[in-house]
Every structure is written in structure tokens, then in C-alpha cells.
Amino acid sequence: MLIPSQAVTGAIHQFESVPLVRFSLLAVSSIFFLVDPFAAVPSFLAITANIPVPRRAAIARKGAITCFVVLSTFALCGRMIFRMFGITLPAFEIAGGLILLLIGLDMLEAKRSPTQEASGDTEEASRKEDAGIVPLGIPMLAGPGAISSVMVLVGQVIHPWQLAAILGCIAATALVSYFVLAGADRVQRVLGETGIRILVRIMGLLLVALAMQFFVNGLGDLGVLTHFVEK
Image 1 (cartoon, rainbow, N blue to C red):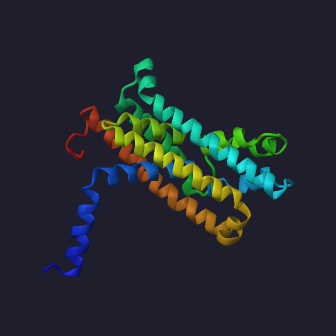
Image 2: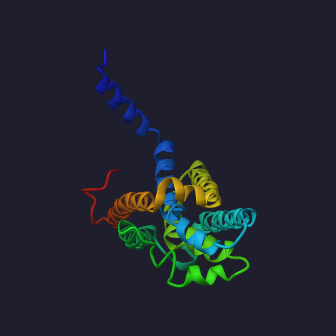
């Protein structure tokens, strides 16, 4: 008979042994942490400061749809882009890891990375009639980091279900982003500025770890770190 700790360990090993679950967890964590709708809440509120609630929800919906369309397009066209420019997966894993590392380090300081939101974007967007697409949808949500992460994941696709898992994670992330931004007032009241900063820092820490894993995978695929890469 298994003691409780052995039962839990066995359940964890069984859980991790399911390829779909492992790949889906990797996809949803890397995509969601990089889109990071919680970190976009203050900028979204500044952009929509004098806009009625229904119009604010429409902008959030347009931003989420833009995020989904952009990331899905790169997911579906990723392999073609690799072939077109002669880019190998290890090279993109290392480049993507570098982008993720820079974004993660900024998130550890509880601030938006310049790759996601350049200085003056929020002020300029507040004067736009259609800020849901630019800069909210891209690059605040679907920025270079999220696009790079999707491209790396697509480069690892072997079975059709893996691509379906990536698209499902993109759709889920876009849906959560819509609800977070549409209810930005409530999110800010519940979490507060301190809560949002803590959440962003936690995501940043996980993102830095994910970036290092991309580095290790890329170097392993090149044969540099074969001893450390799990086969």
C-alpha cells in the first residue's frame, strides 16, 4: 500500500508523463506570462480614462481579438517563416530565450518591458480613436516576446495535436486578457497596485527560468550541452 507522499509522487509522475499535458502547460505558461494582461491594466486604464464602460469593453475585446489573430498567424505560418529565411530552430530558441530574458528581468522590477510598451505609447494611444489594435493588441499584448515564444513552440511541433494545443492556449490567453482588461477597474481594486506588482514579479521569475530553458534547449540541439539536456 502506498503511503500518502508516495501516492502524490506517483500521481505527479503520471501527470507529467502525459505528453499533451506537459506540452500544453509549457505552451500556456510561456504564452500567458508573455502576454501578461495584468501588467497591462494600468496602461489600459490610462488609455481609457475618459471612455464609458461599454466602449472600454469594446476596446478590450478588440485588443484581445488582435492578440489572438497575430499570435495564431505566427503559429500557423511559423514553419514557413523558418524555411523562408533559412532560420534553424536552435538559433530561434537562443534568440527567443534572449528576448524572454530581457522581458523577464524587466518584469522582476515590476515594470513593462520596452519591447511591449515604448515610452509615450500610453499617452499617444489615449488620443487615438482605435487604440484596441495598436498599441493594446500589438505590441502591449502580442509583443515580440509572445511572438517569439509561439514561434519556438511551433518549431517543436511534431504531431497535429501539438499545434492544436498551441492554438488553444492562444485562444485561452486572449479570452482571459479580454476579461481582465474589460474588468480592469475591478482587477485594480481587488489586487491593488501592490498586488499587481507582486503578480508581475512572480511571472517575471518564471519567465526568466523559461528563457534559460530555451537557451539550454537551443544549445542542446546544437550539441553544446548534450550532457544537460533531457532526451
